[in-house]
Amino acid sequence: MSVSKSQYAWLVVAMLWFISFFNYADRQAIFSVFPLLEKEMKLDPVQLGMLGSSFAWVYGLMGPVAGFIVDRIRRKTAILAGLQTWSIICAATASAVTFPQLLFFRAAEGLGESIYYPASMSMLGDYHCSQTRSRAMGVHQTSVYLGTIGGGFFAGIIGQRYGWRWSFLFFGVLGILLGVVLTRYLREPVRGAQEPAPQQHEKISAREYGNLLSRTPTLIILMAAFVCSNFVAVVLLSWMPKFLYDNFHMSLAMSGLTATIYVQLASMIGSPVGGWLADLLSRRTKRGRMIVQAIGVFGGAPFVAMCGLSHSMATLILALTAWGFFKGLYDANIWASLFDVVPPHARGTACGAMNAVGWLGGGGTAPLLIGIIARQYNSLGFAIAIASVVYLAAGALLLTGLMLFVKKDAIRMDALALMR
Image (spheres, rainbow, N blue to C red):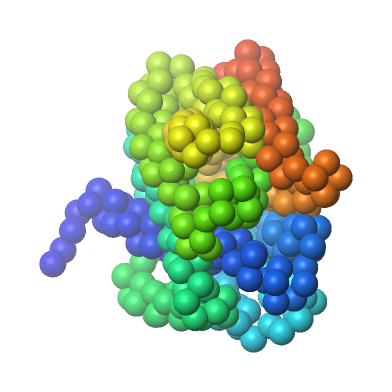
């Protein structure tokens, strides 16, 4: 059965959706089995934090390398090779019997997953024009939320019944099978196909990207805001299962599910809404996508604080749900905002660089820093609550970009695309 170009563009969103689901399910699984690892390997909060941070450090360090690779090879090859690599490593994690071995596999998974987002976002940017780009990426973003829920819940329930090792085998094997199936159906698009003047594929050098970065303040601001937002997201996703297990005496399965389901389902509503609203506003102003992002972080900040300070389950659920909705508004436009100021031939590199700083500066520090603060003050809830200040910093950065830079940078990018 043949499909039109526009139909296939949305089929690509669907195929990438399933890959992204496993990308996030695999990385979330470990947090639901923290209590089992803590008991079996006698780990303290700092060591548990290192398991979360080790993934982020490798993921972040490999970001620029992944971005440069994506701008030089077929995105299809990068995406499917990455899927197979991280799935094999996920399954191999089950063989760990000591903390150093577990730390090694956790870090190595970041190596495999680092190439996915630069490649997939670059691919979606070439299948969807500016009028549908935020919506396409917003729909794709829902896979992150369901993948996080699935990883948290199924790892918890499998670990509770059969031991934590089976959780990693389960997700690893399914990811390998998915890669085999999608090899037949995923196709490589022409680079820059949705721009005003489609260009030949040109390779950007590190020096050229440095020049682009230096003359595009909005790009720097978006990267810095992503550091802050990613810090908050990783804090809640890595430590909330243990917070619920310790403070509300939930089972592993229920703590893993509760920590993720309210946030992620609310984000599944917020992300399409954020994509639709940003596409609508971007037709009227170059500031449209960043306006929606700013609403997301400012709106979410008080609910992040409420998450850590809650003493009742009802209040905590309310806070997680509200934070998740505002998080979705921001998430839907992470990459679409970037593409408003970055030309097509540099988008893979830009995504890789943004992932690098976001995960090194945000995700890489968050689990370990919160573990240290929790041990110092003997309160995981307090440590979680103060992460809300970082959200406010993201909002201040976005406001600066909105008022001073984004309009000029977007106009410059459009002119550059027409000249090439």
